[in-house]
Length: 372
Image 1 (cartoon, rainbow, N blue to C red):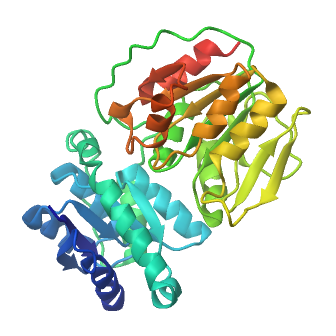
Image 2: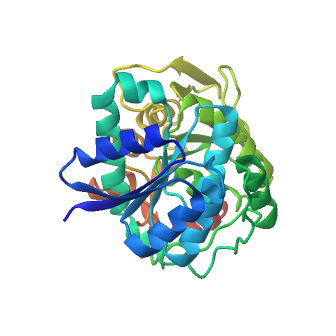
C-alpha cells in the first residue's frame, strides 16, 4: 500500500516540486497540499495521511504550532523542512520537541540542480518515518495545548513559544520493558553516545538526568548538518546540569562536560584525553560518524569506555561497538519500544554486541548508577 503524504508549504513552487518528486515514486501518494498551518491541521484530520512534510515559516499559523495541534488531535509523523542557518537549526529543534520526527534542509538550488539526489533522500525519509507511526499514539493526551495563532509567521512563532514552553522532558513514547539487569559500577574514562533520527529529543532526555558532578567525560555523535550542531549544543547546555559544547580541535575531555561532534566533520579521541576534529571524508556516509569516534575510543581507552547507541536509521556504530567489545568495554542499546527508528540499536542487538538494552527513560538513571 502506498504511503499517503500531505505536503504543507506556503510556496507554490516548493509544494509543486515536493509533490512531483514524491509522486514519481509509485509507492508514495500525495493525498493533499496545504498553504499554512491551519490548513495543515484541517487536511490532516480529513485526509489522515501517513506522513506530513511541513515548512515552519508560514502565514496564519506557523509550522511548529501546527505540529503541536496535529500531535494532539491526529498524531502523524512530520518531516520538517528547515533552512541551513543557526536560526533555522533552533526552529527545527523546537519542531522536534513539538513532535516532528525528522527534518531535511530546504535548499531550492539542490531541488533544481540535483533532482535525483533530492528525490532519493526525500523518498527514503518519507518511507522511514512512515514506519514510526506507533511512536505518536501517546502524544495526543500529553503535549501542552496551543491556542495562539497570528497572521504574522514571525510573531506566531514567538507566541507559540511563549504560550507553550517546551518541556525539558517529554512524555514516554511507548511502554518500555527491559530484561537487562542493573548495570555494574565501574570507573569509566569515557561515556560515548551515538544516535541519528530521533536523537535530539533522546539525547535531551538522557542528558538532563545526569548530575553536574557526573564523573566521566562524555562525547556525543549525532547525525546532523554543520549548521545545526552549535545550536543543538547550546540548547543542551541550557537544559542540562552538565556542560555541553560543540567540540573543537584540541578540546580536552573532562568530567561533567559533553562534547558534541561538529556536523560535517569527524571526531576522534586520544589517550591523552584530547579531541581531534578532522575534515569530513566524502567516502563516508555520515559526517560525523559514530563508528569513527567509537573506534578511536576503543584504541585509546581499552576496557574503560561505556558506549550507548540510541535511536536512528542505519547501522552506524555497529563496527565501532565491535571494536569496543573486543577491548572489553561495555555497550548499551536503546530498546525498540522507545525508539523513533529502531535501526542503529537493532544493528547492535542483532550483532550480539549489547551488554544491556534499556528503555530511553531508564538510560540516564542507569548511567548515574554505572559510573563511579
